[in-house]
Image 1 (cartoon, rainbow, N blue to C red):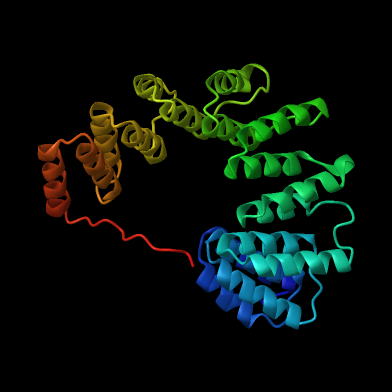
Image 2 (cartoon, helix red, strand yellow):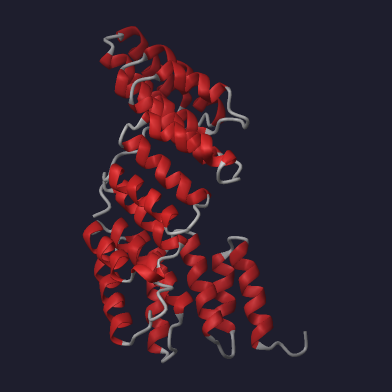
Length: 316
């Protein structure tokens, strides 16, 4: 192109971001003769999608210094970056900035704030934001508070929220249903969980996804119904992935079930031979069952395969 305007620059940067080439996108961004809010939002969003939340926050800081006023998309991305990097103090500061400048008068940022406070450990503040303006709650706000309550162990409260949401005329989507099924799993509420799972297609006209099936496997596994969970996995309409088998394997460790644990571990190794986690988990199951020959066999396989257990570390 002889003449590249800001629209063409933004379009090409967007395509690099979409395809995961964030480095190239940033190089082009730096070459731009002028930038608008779309340019900044596109790149910041790209860093967040890649899990590089610290870099996203640094870029947002540069944007503010450039005297460009953030819009709702920018602020949503800021909270996404704060959540991903655990930058709770920054998130609180941005919230104060929003309140001071009346940037959330229509409530479009409510679900971002609820999500940020929930995932940064302050479920009380998340509930406070949710309760502040009952008349402007949308699906995203309801879903965020349901998932937040579940994350903090308030399973029954999350399910009550799910039913309250429907009474107000807001219909759940597939993400909401994952959240409430997770609540059933954490609360070990078998009947409630199966009732909701069975209604996904019949009541809500949504085709259940692998995440919904995973929640049921987790639910059955937590209450020790491992044989039923294994049969449920075998009868799934889609091929079980690493998460499904990993959920079952974790339940086997919790309940010291060697037989099904061996199957789940082997399925995971078939899907990803380089991952040491299933062998380490199976070793723990053998150890708790006092099966020393099985334990030594697993450590030998771990050594022969050349895979290593990733060391644990703290985010702090």
